[in-house]
Image 1 (cartoon, rainbow, N blue to C red):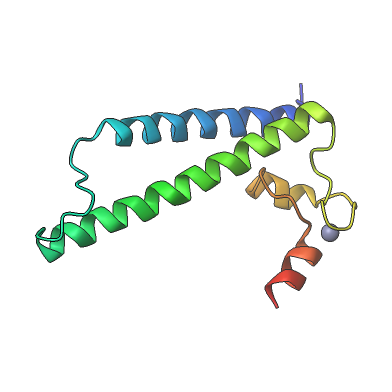
Image 2 (image 1 turned 180 degrees about the horizontal axis):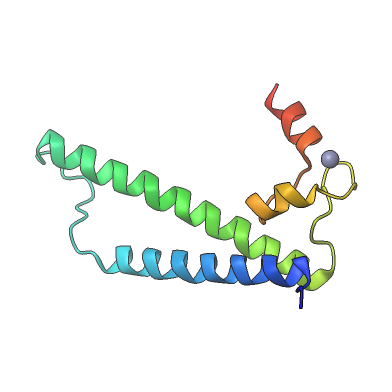
Length: 110
Ligand SMILES: [Zn+2]
């Protein structure tokens, strides 16, 4: 029995969403972040900045994933938001949260 690719994408996205939510909630409970602590050692500042950048990336990624799940519910999943053409299945398999096709993506990059 071969399952529907959209169902598979949904499973991947839900697993990733749960993982990110867990990670982000764990970080929130982490008590070590001292805002505006000018006296903190340089290494500690770097560590906390790196942690913040990582959390920021994870938050953005979570937004992308939630958007993809909404598109699955709306029936527009796998459609390029720029040109309206279907996104290649290989791209969706690798990046189920992709909102643009390879063509539009590479155009935007250049
Ligand atoms: Zn496109």
